[in-house]
Length: 249
Image 1: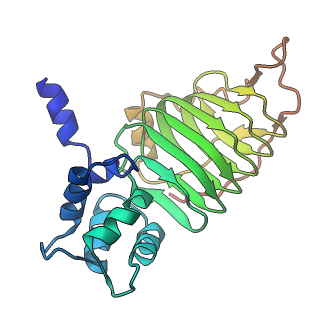
Image 2 (image 1 turned 90 degrees about the vertical axis):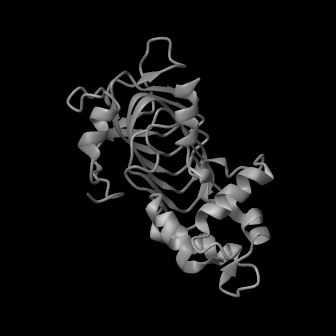
């Protein structure tokens, strides 16, 4: 019980930013951002807190602009409550422009969901436990070392650099995966997908391989198994060495 309590108290308030959040959880997050306790969130307070929690500059600015309904330069509790799901720590959804970043230390080995976004760049520069990527279109994505599995589903026209123990795709079309995978990647009901070695970088990437218990030199990116082919031959899969510049180190 004590271990569970310690783990629970370490969860950041913004992890509860979902449609199912209680008023208590929403208020706790609001109070965490309200540095001076005046009941309003200034742009500086929001920017400072989100920066400390590992969010990128572009996402911080877009959150404030879209949430400040009356454009008075401060967020009330009601404004925050209506818009805070946009900055959920572990659920990235409904982005249609710009960049979303989770810097080292933001995810801390937890599960992550990335979904329902288009035309944006998403960079997870931290290690995770497992990741679901669902319903992305025309996105560039970087997933730092994942100790478990990454499942990419219903993604189209995306470039995804991912380091993981296990990769599975389903219903993906015209996507390129720059991949580190400790086991054979598996594709199912996917068309016109390309695979190449993982070649992204960011600060602390080597440490995150260690944190995820992955050996960087043991990469089976090329051993793709097509679940729909009885022979295990991945028809329609192209192996390439094309470059990726999604995240600089």
